[in-house]
Length: 198
Image (tube, rainbow, N blue to C red):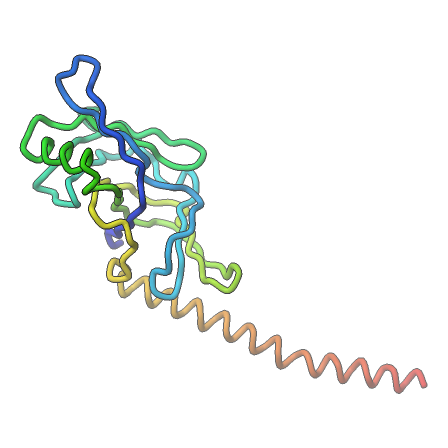
């Protein structure tokens, strides 16, 4: 399983903690049932309940840099809450250079997006309005990160996933071809039946 990364626009908010000793960052970490941009031949959405938030220690990182940890669910500096339309987070930012940089960059508006890293255990593909749509049904949420660039990147799509998309496309094309071939036969049979009635 490959660690995949996706990006979303997010309304990030920074406020002071109740004791005013730290800064709290809040926002949406993962949206549910929202179609992504084109990821290179397909679009993607996360199904509600796809990630079990209690099975592992999930980290908050600064721009996906594992050496710049902002919080952790294990020590409750990162809190995640699943709602009907997505997973929201509350992050108690550390009193470190990285934490202070995060507050400054987010308050200035330089950082206005979130990204999440995950591994997929179960998914499916379907054709919707001419688009191939991948739905992530079950997986592990590994980390979330405030980031500068919200645009989905096709370079984050693994070669293995691209092969699966190509295979799905080929299967769909074969099924369409079989339907096209069967139609004239059905029409001919109907015509013969009408002639027999005459």
